[in-house]
Image 1 (cartoon, rainbow, N blue to C red):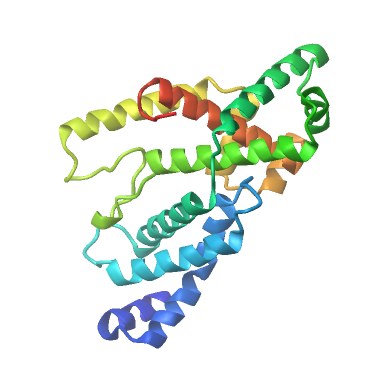
Image 2: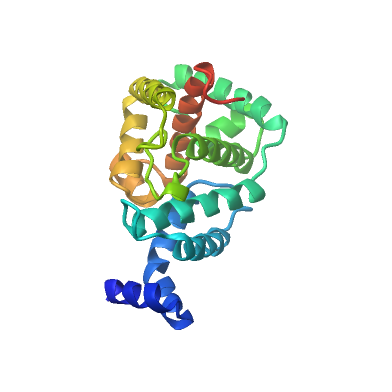
Length: 252
């Protein structure tokens, strides 16, 4: 069905056919939106991401070239993802106080973990910091948003203009030897940063990025609440971002 629609759209650029293709790929847009909305601040609505993703899908429909050495789904995924990241940049905010509050939260985590012999709960952190539980969750959410946007932009930015899928940097005949070396260096830094994470954080990233489990499913595997999964995800992304910053690939 999709191939037939594609052939018809390529030949006619018919609006009805385009609309049919949009409906065909709308589940992909919603899937990407659901994953990017993972643990983000409450001001970020998933529907906002879906709307921007549809715009990205429309751009993909107009710009895709069958001569590309990748399929339309891959090409569209990067366009959709890029449009959603642009929307997240507009909707998310990182006040100057975020890093101060984050340092306070990290200090409380370390202190209570040492005292309790386990990871503290949100309520215990709130009591220690004299914050509300909502304030604790908000700091985690803001950090999730900031780290996610930064890492996605740096590590997974699309080579959509050439119709190529990237890993850490673009690959293909248009990449210079210098770019190739830098790509390998980033890959090495990222691999080392992941290897240095606690085992549970590594498992969480694998479940999320490789197995593509939902927030609830990850919580069931790790035997923690969905809120705790969001916290662990924020911590893992923060650690990766710090390592890449130390290596000079990101700015604070």
